[in-house]
Amino acid sequence: LLNSTLVKPKYKVTVTRDVINEYGIALDWVHYDSLPTQSNTVKPVLLILPGLTGTVDDAYVMNICDKGLLNGYNVAIYQMRLLNPQVKMNKDKTPVNLFDDLDCAVDFIRNKYGEDINIYGIGFSYGANQLVRYLGEKDYKYNKIKGGVSISNPFEFMVFAKLCEGTIYNRMLLMFLQKVYKRTRHALLSNKELNLNDDVLLNTITLYEFDKYYTAKIMGYSSPCDYYRNIGCARFIKNINVPLLCVHAMDDQITNAKVIPYYDIESNPNV
Image (tube, rainbow, N blue to C red; front, side):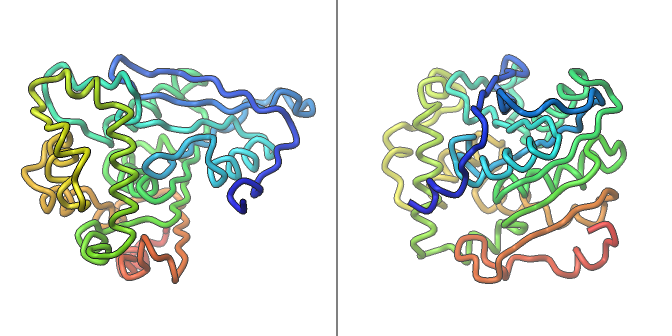
């Protein structure tokens, strides 16, 4: 009930989708049909990176869309290729690189509105990790994104996985991942090179097991530990040279505050 009443849009919402390439990466553009007339100046873009299965239908995403639209932004929700039922793997058979995919989305926006467009990113949970790592690994030389906000970021996935082990949140995250897999399973199973086992993936009981038989394979890692060790954004924070605000609840039961890399954050005046 609370989740359904967080946002009461003042205007009718329309969502249009740009599919960026043949692999299934997409941007969902959110519009209010009857916004008051605003100036003709080019609007900045607010790029939203939701959590694992987030869409405009989720209250926390709509909250940010509402704030962005009412404050004069063009608002886009980034959708990973692994959320698209028509997902495809790379033609050159290389693994999925989340940060290359995000870079494709950013370049698409710049081609759409011009290279001088001001893009600002806000990420939640898994999306926050993607945004922060992108800023520190891919974009620190180019500053295509002018600033960002990270909310409830897992930061260090090895620590995050250990803290979740044996808790109800481990099961919750597994359910989210299986939900994603069910959405895309037909496209993925048709790719015989991935060698995915449908029965195993639908019946796993731990997050580690699912990551062993699905996530690590898709991302090209040899094991879940290799995936956890490499996917986190903490070690890239030192490179970020645009303003970044990190927001984290100290009593967050999923992305535990123990994962916050205080020294990395404090060492960079931009963060």
